[in-house]
Amino acid sequence: EDTVARIAAGEVVERPASAVKELVENSLDADASSVDVTVEEGGTELIRVADDGHGMTEAALRTAVREHTTSKIDGLEDLESGVATLGFRGEALHTIGSVSRMTVRSRPRGGDGAGTELVYEGGDVTSVEPTGCPAGTTVEIEDLFYNTPARRKFLKTTATEFAHVNRVVTRYALANPDVAVTLTHDGREVFSTTGQGDLQAAVLAVYGREVASSMIPVDADGDDLPPGPLESVSGLVSHPETNRSSRDYLATYVNGRAVTADAVREGIMGAYGTQLGGDRYPFVTLFLAVPGDAVDVNVHPRKREVRFDDDDAVRRQVDAAVESALLEHGL
Ligand code: ADP
Ligand code: MG
Image (cartoon, rainbow, N blue to C red; front, side, top):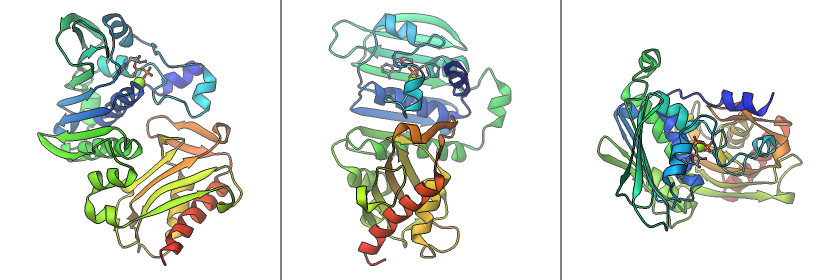
């Protein structure tokens, strides 16, 4: 499997949330300190991601929407090491723009002069004009899948599509407490983090006081952990009484990237044992550090599912880390 094949595998935009994920990753890669995500009708009518990151010149903007262009990739090594930057396929803007009406406004940070507005419709650049805009980048996606009716039809209800968007934005907000992340749906602010707090503050902003006050710190590394590939396990897990019937609240990260992994989920659930009751899940924000060669990051590019060379050991390590945190709280 070569780099190009992996790049191709990752290019699918399945639903509004996949576009939101790519745009938010780009904003974080651009060193933004604030990222505002606005969606209408679950993202099917409008997705707008505005950042105050390093921005793009007109030339960079023209390049950015072309196929297979990235300013980030450094070959296969980067892909396998869990990737220093989040975006790495050079496909997102081009792919999203091919199935929507996309407007990008950008102005380089610290540069003088106007910004640039580029309009991209169904895969063609239809206009490029100077425009007044703040430093940073705003990408607007209207009418996602307007030219691919089959995919448009496949979209679920507004509520379901928004739930996916919310989960994606929540994950990035929790992993980046130093970035002010705001999510607005149909004119209503869903949450807003300050960008000046720690993980606990981000949990408070995103999930509210009840959940935040039930959180228990997990912090295990070195000798705290049984043998296995994980170098550390840290974050927050909820008191077993604070739970939900959905896995959506299990936010897990490997080397800073939001991913899901069966071994990790099973380790978490194992630590709680029977305390949660049937089909209930805790609120979890858990960061795992692992050497890049012990994890296959590309099992499922869209869903961000990963697998470890030694899943059993990972399961035991996560179980032990969470269990000892719960034990310390008499649970
Ligand atoms: P990738 O992120 O994989 O490089 P994308 O298609 O997502 O590919 O983006 C293409 C390029 O456009 C990026 O490499 C980056 O240089 C530029 N870019 C995209 N979004 C932003 C942004 N929000 N701020 C600054 N530059 C951006
Ligand atoms: Mg990208």
